[in-house]
Amino acid sequence: MTNHFQSTPVSVVLITLNEEKNIERALKSVQWASEIIVYDSGSTDRTVEIAQKMGAKVTSGKWFGFGPTKRLATNLATHEWVLSLDADEEVSAELALEIKLKWTTLMGETAYLLPRLSYYLGRWIRHGGWYPDHQIRLFNRKHSQWSNTGVHEKVEAKNYLNLTSHINHYVFKDIAHQIQTNNKYSSLLALELFRQKRAFSWFHFLTKPTVKFIECYIWKLGLLDGWPGYVIARNASHSVFLKWSKLKELAAPDLERSRT
Image (tube, rainbow, N blue to C red):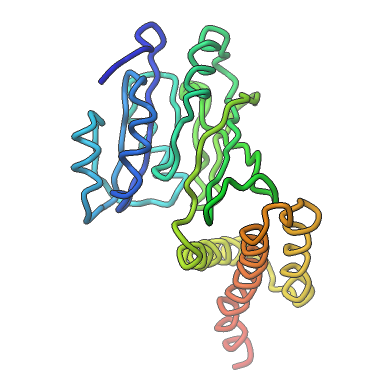
């Protein structure tokens, strides 16, 4: 592995599950790092083989939810500074250079947010709430760490600052993939609300999907992304509809028991 960061050690950490179509691109973009850690939670494709071939240190283990699993993977790193990356992302050349140039000025108690630019339906999406889509990805694990939440996990730190160069994100392979992902995440979000004892609201159920579409397509200018912008806004609206519908579904057994 070529290492241009010999004086500035950083561990790149990824969690994976059946990412053979993405993992090579992601790992190629961080060959400059002094260490790459891959935590795989049961891939049945060539993900592990590809990662090992490209010099990553691969550990296989159970899935504990996004936050806990990322925390576990981060603890496998050798270095204090960690760059977290998803398998469907890549570090742009500009971001790699920016990290290298600013390395000596990075502060241990500060976690750094990176803008993320997503590619979907044949174009880079710059509106509709999809950009700059800042993600907290570069941090010192002695001072910062992933939250323990199963979904909507984030790095908890004392301070936060932005870098300017972006991560490239190859978000969905097609519309069916987006719908499949929305279905999965709406279930996780509904379950999280249920566990928090959040009551189902007819007002939210009836209004929030429409508000979400207007937010993405009009307020955040998704219309400027053409047809993909409309698809994104419509699917975002439907995802909200699914979340509240599933919360109602989860609450239904309790309602039935209360009547008997």
